[in-house]
Amino acid sequence: MLDNIRYIGHHTLSFIERIGMACCFLLKMTIRVPRKWWHWYTIIEQIYFLGVLSLVIILISGGFIGMVVALQGFHTLSDFGAQSELSRLIALSVFRELGPVVTALLFAGRAGSALTAEVGLMKTDNQLTSMEVMAVDPLSYVGFPRLIAGIIVVPLLTILFSATAIYAGYWVSVAWLGIDGGTFLSVMKSGVDFHDDVMQGIIKSIIFGLVIVYIAIYQGFYTQQSASGLGRAATKTVVFSSIAILGLDFLLTAFMLGA
Amino acid sequence: MEPAINGQDQPAIIVIDRLSFQREDRKILDDVSLTIQKGTIVGIMGPSGIGKTTLLSLINALETPDSGSVYFQGANMHQLDDRTLYAARKKIGHMFQNGALFGHLSVFENVAFPLRENTNLSEDMIRDLVMLKLETVGLRGVWNKMPGQLSGGMARRVALARATALDPDLMLYDEPFTGQDPISTGVLTTSICKMRDILGLTSIVVSHDMEAITKIADVIYLIGDAKVLASGSAADILASTNPAVRQFVSGSADGVIPFHCPASTTLTQDLLYVG
Image (cartoon, rainbow over all chains, first blue to last red; front, side):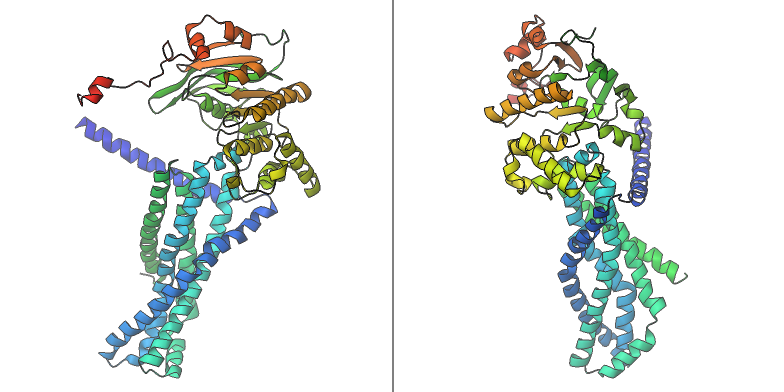
């Protein structure tokens, strides 16, 4: 009995300690602004590494998702004779939910895991420690630029994802399902509000970008110094990021809709 | 009583006071005290996995001790705030066992890194300094190579050039002679001695290379069983009658320093799947 209480107490304390460590880590990373101008140049490198190299998967996925939503939407709306509302359905689904969520999930899988592997390898090779001994703060040199790059890149990728999805949805609707192109665009224009719909998705994507990159860097910094440890850290990044994205999406949606 | 160095009284640059450190259940250092005087070369020797690298990490405040203190130039390294600690670290060069070079930077950029980050020198000045440092370790010819293109020994020499880039007061070397050919070892030992003689640089060298250490060290500390087993000049260590020192110097597997890591079962039990 006592052993069980001790076991539960030990794990509860260690969980609280880890939460505290993670919060301190985020706080330190956000306040340790680089001192030298070339650290800011690293942000551009990271935008390329995290953003440009993720473009292919984002654009292809956006295209297919737009096409699938068009087909599924048309099939369902036809039952009610409301096919003309298809563009509104596609646009609202993509701008509010699918764009930010799917982009963030893909980003976590492509760039988040790569980021953890990169930082984890630096940790395993003592590169982070060697920065410490040269009086350079690794959080400022490695963490901060990547965090900023993630916050910049994920909304941009979300915009591109959404644009591709809507274009693909338009193509399927007009060329395949026989919906008039003008009707498609005018219904979409009247049914979508920039502040309520488009900005909602962009705000979500900024928060998702912050969370994914934070989890990836944290896992890299605290990886076990072995090959299997690196693999586990990359896996944790994808799993934790995915859960965080979906959980946060629910909370943010509830908050934004005023529920 | 600390050993006298060439009969001279030098001020202490490092004072380790009753330092204890434990990792999980294993005691790495237990109440260790020692003083390192300015301008000396100190050799730290001992069996593998005994905590020599950890001692260097504790000196540079990369690890936090369970108890005790490390004073560098009078300041307790483990009680400094981040800013003061970084200021202290600018005076300490630390060469890692694996080199720890930045894989995304070239040899030149690796050596230039501490200069760029911690000084306001012009690019021309940084270039000249980097080339001079690389020349010292015989690697000026590979300035544009990436670390992945270097052998382990060459990477450690680049790491040495990088560690000395800021002209520190104290150098910590972790296995600098591993993977070096006899010529490189000779050049490295000569460089360490020259830096002491000309610049008054203090060096703490962790190494298993008995020959190189006895050649250059003013004082040698032999660490074992979480304590300092013996200390003194190279001549003292070589002439010591202490059984642990004799065993280490002669390289014998039998003696007070166990070659085998402690095991909960005997070899016979393991072979017969008993227990």
